[in-house]
Length: 478
Image (tube, rainbow, N blue to C red; front, side, top):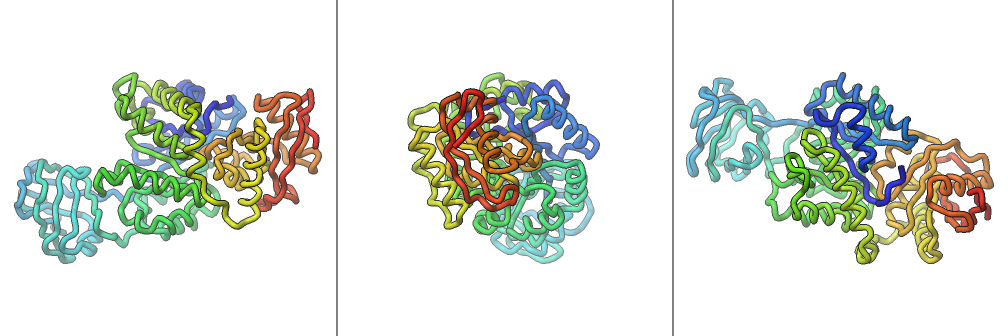
């Protein structure tokens, strides 16, 4: 199952894609890892999906990553006496701690932390930004607001606060229960929703204790202001454009997407572009031209992965959505200008041995026009550092740890193989050639470059580069 593209595809599972046959079809169409959204998935169903994905993985012999996306704090209004009201521009509307049903003048806000943190001048966005309020008078019991953009408002609609730094954790009691269930089940990635600060990521990592990698979803303005610290604390980043586009002006989202993609790459952390990438394919077998351009832009930017949400989870054409994304990725990467765009964005290597080796390996592989760059990696970090360089040849990562292989499913350009660790350097070189030969990356007589850490099997010791020739049986020798 060798992919003919470097960018990875993350497909969300749901009612349209939860049985073995459909998950198998999605993998064959191009999905490299799968997302389980805990906003809609009970624990029993999550465990069933994980078992099904592992079944597909074992039948293909290639690591498949699983990402569990935690719901995060959902802020909502209370209920109205008549179920809904019409808010008019310019009117006064109060949010308060009174649990009585609301009317056209007030409604219960069951979040005392919002009332405590709101200040005059702060905006409140209701129902995904369709209605906009500005706080004029605030206290711990109520907030008097002015309606700037009116509209219909009904029971328990969502509340977004682009100007307010809420002193709440990114993890609710539900998230903690979901997280523990996911970790016990053995998932590979945990996505944290509504991250505001690096401490939100560190809090989750204390619970996770290395059992999964952490992906911070950037969807709040507060996170943008602290992006460098959040990236440093996280293992990966998701540009969650849906909620980001609610709390920020829509026209800012494309530039922020580019900035986040480049910052994550500079830090050597995988970055996923998400939300509404092929939205029309929920109902249509073909996307709009604008959606195709949107997906292509993420590929040109050098993002590690592109994500499908409702398109694969609840849409009418889940397989078509994945195969469309797969074709767009392949076509962009065939474009003669693609390499020049990727090279122009390449960050300077960091001053570590691992980065210096990764940069040197890329230069050698491209100078000699080698067909593959092979990494032996215990934790996956060697492959991640090499992928940061976005080399021209494919990256073949060989690891003895299935968990490392599954986490690498989200990383740009990495074809991962799980194999017994090398006994010594000769075995390492010989089997690197055999694996690359077997999987169709090299032919007899060609040369490959091999990157590893010595002594073998110790994470974080990337310090060796070898150029080897591949023999007629695929075995390599220096």
